[in-house]
Image (cartoon, rainbow, N blue to C red):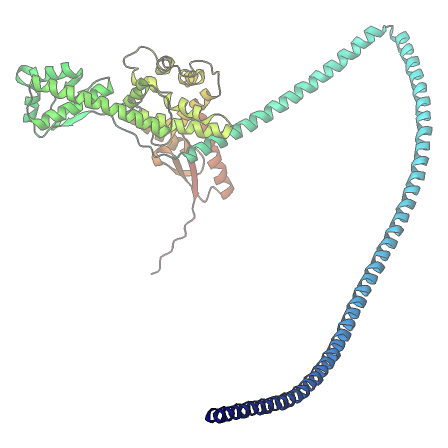
Length: 527
């Protein structure tokens, strides 16, 4: 019973719980329904608002798109109209050009037609003229033949004889004209050649303006005292004999104070002797053994120096391919002089003068420079070998296979043989230019004084000349005339006459300037 009661209570409790749950679920479902309904209503209203807003925006976008489309349409239409207008303008311009070109073509066609008609008329006239000329030629030929027959009958000559006489007459006339033409051409060529040669020589001298001084070759040795002369001579003259035997020179010991003179034809030997004697005097030990030792050392030193001098000369003149013997001979020219002019320096100057003149004439400047440098090489040994230095130099260079132009220039620069190339007269001219420049060579005092006296006496012989002075070593003549007797025009005439007389009567290197002075002085004294 108790259990049944408990079971009933339990069943009642479970039923109540179930009912409660059902009621709770119903309430929850109802609440959920209500909630969803409220939310749905809100969502519906929100959706309507969104749709309304979207429609509004869509309308705005459509309107904006329509406005933009209209604006784009208007813009495109304007661009189209502008492009169309430009195309129309271009078409109109093209039409105008075409129309103008057509007009020009029509004008040209008209001109061509006119010219064609004119040419046709001219051809017609030319044809008529040719027929007339042909008829006249036939008439002329008939007349010439008639005259020829008449001349043959009158002269009694045949056709061949008449031709020969006519040809002889024409030949004589042509020969005379040719002779006159040749004479004129030769005279003109001579004048042009003289003027051109002067220009070339003046250009060469001006471009190579080397300084020149006359050298002295007196070989003297200074000694500190006269007692040293006795030591040089030695006991019974053994020192001086040993020295002369070792050097091959003559030693002159005279009364001249402080000087011993060395004399020899060989300039190198003389230089070796001079240097050896200076070393002996400086050393103080003078005896035959020491003399031989010093002389041998000095000779080796001089030979080495000669070779170096030759190499420097060849390098300075820019002449290559020389044999060692040729270089040595060039170095020996350093101790050789001609009328006081150093031969090596003279040869280098001739080399440059030859090159300058050869360049002006369009010749080979290098070959001309070689000819000029070697032209006096024979002077290095002319005291040892018989003959003139041109032939000696040519024989030496021939052994070293020099070109024929070089050999001819060396052998013929003094006119001993005929020239076979233009380089020989170039060397001759360069040699004369170098030798005749002021100060290059030394002349004797008597000859110098005589030339000055001749210049002064020659000028003093003209009327109106008061005084005449030769100055600048005879390179200028100053003439003072009486202003009361000689006017300006006469002064110019006197200067010209004196210059011509000097050219005709005197021989001199270079030129002589004649200056005539005419001066009027007015003097008063204030007291």
